[in-house]
Image (cartoon, rainbow, N blue to C red; front, side, top):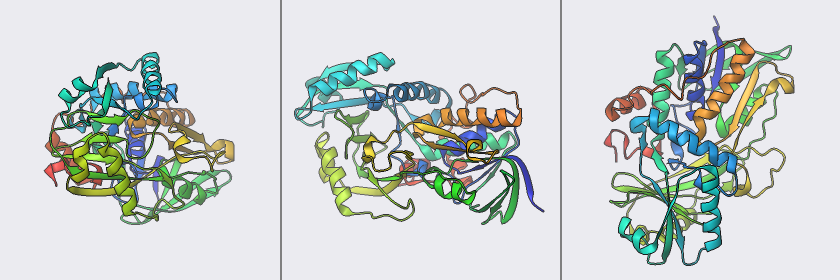
Length: 408
């Protein structure tokens, strides 16, 4: 006999579990299905930066404003899923000082707090900084451990009545008379789910899920490589103060730093090349800020795929594609009870979830407000408990496997 649910959410990354948590807190009957363990896609394979918004301040002020707002919320609710490091935007002698000033002014306009210090003072903060550092701008960046964050959202959703089903791939979607009437799910579920509403939160794979319902969601996935090397003692995140490029970020972990990243379009988010040249390029570029990483022992390397969405400009240069999120109401495409949430950043997952839950509640006639910005995530003050949540949902991604449960 088929399972019934008011809302079916497809995709167990940060956005998907964020939606399920939001809806469960509004007393909506909701089910999530994920083809692997939680965080198996983009979320668990990210570089793990909790953006202050400074990276986007001069190019996308609305996106930057979203980042600083969510940055503050997550520091309040996510506890040990966040490491409050601060961040530095680093200007080397080869970098354009006018760009530095544009970014500083843009941060000021958005409300992102900054402080500028010279190279000598910066090297007191980070003794191994390159001699070519002329000045840095301090911003409230942080590090997020996505496996913990996603699992904590899932536990809170489940504790409020949601069904969170992992290793449950969607195998088919049946549409009749302009509505999704059934979704076939394999794996551990091996059953049909009959929802009143469906949300596609499958990230880079959203196009594949949409196609099962006869819908067209044109994703523009791009791959990026991260390299974690042995290095102890870095406190702040380092960002190269230049237009976004390869190898312009260094994130501190415990006894390691994560170097990132690249951006290259891929046709298939499951099948793409992974080359030594990409790794070498990232290490070399990051070493211009922190020379010691050039010879450091490499501990882990992983690739992730960004869920970028730009249907009207698919040939646009990858780094020029917006990182904003887009909420697609498929009623406009003839499927009344389906929606998709695409694009966005890990930092803004909660806001993406709120916008999606608002749409779903409007469709279902549910009069309830979002509570996720005010409710503490479970286990937030207990790293060991958070790591138990990760194991429960098979949610370990490579992004933070050196930190979760002390693994290395």
